[in-house]
Amino acid sequence: MITVYHNPRCRKSREALQWLEGRGIPFETVEYLKHPLSAAELSELLGKLGMEPDALVRKNEAIWKEAFRGRDLSPEEVVRAMAQHPKLMERPVVVSGKRAVVARPADVISKLIDQ
Image (cartoon, rainbow, N blue to C red; front, side, top):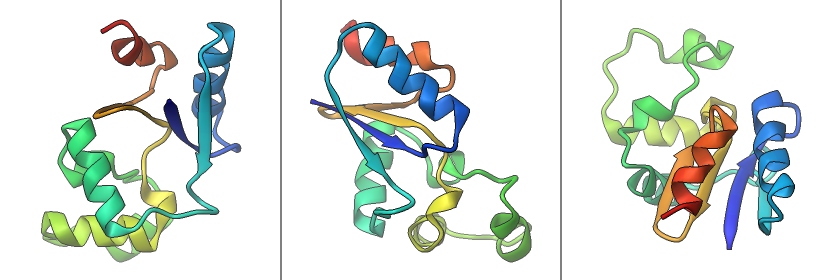
């Protein structure tokens, strides 16, 4: 089953859902702002993405600029920041099994489906 970490207010996130729906691919959504991921869940997700924590951070968010920008944070501190402030997580993140992608643009999802 495919899982989409989704923010309904985000156009790119909605495009990912439309991409999946248009291909008849079943999926479940997790509105991560309503149901934030724990630090452990974020670490697991980063492993599936093959990314360092700071690569998943939305650095233009006000909370990042106000509280974290310019600080020398360890990867664990970045993960904790995303766990405490889920708005910092880039979206949408699409997961299939042990792999995941940040679906920007939506057709990046094909990397999960076509293999």
